[in-house]
Length: 244
Image 1 (cartoon, rainbow, N blue to C red):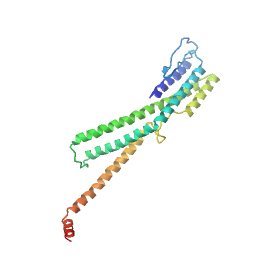
Image 2 (cartoon, rainbow, N blue to C red):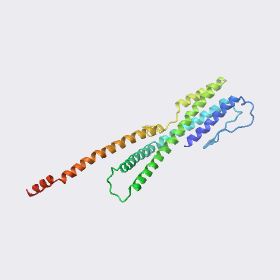
Image 3 (cartoon, one colour):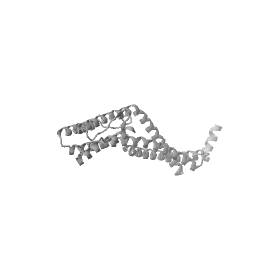
Image 4 (cartoon, rainbow, N blue to C red):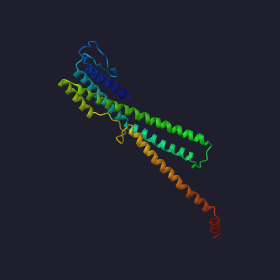
């Protein structure tokens, strides 16, 4: 996602400032040093000769713009994400059920397709929808992790800051990071991060066990009903009732 790339550039700005403080060379560099590339609608550059407070202020403004962009994207696409993930999950459940039922030999289907073709088709379809979920989760998770990395860099700078003005600015930036957290959700029902993998795996296992158990319990009853219908006693009763 675009927010993830922007967070990477913001982290480079702060890491560059931290490196300058470490080597104590900020006053010795006279040429301009670009640390941040063009950010779509605006262009921001960190310059070694700039004041540290000014660099931190620009970074705070960039972070706020990224937060607003991420919040807007999550607001407008939250229900679409919920729909995509829900449909993909249902298709994965039924595809996995069909494949397991066929491989375990519990399926009595009559089809022109061979078992290999049947299993291959549903396995490929299941993989495609898994890729769709993984792409959504990984994009959101990377943007969130980059935002968390920014907080770590800010606190590193705070520990190395010497002047009260710089410390004050960094404390403001730290508070901003606490209150403006990047987070992607599906209509507020669940977070879109790597914890979703564990949730989907647990739900998938539960539903598969229920479906396979239901299939196993329904077949003995069906065979029992067929044996009762085909028994001589049942046939005799049907003939007598017809004659009466």
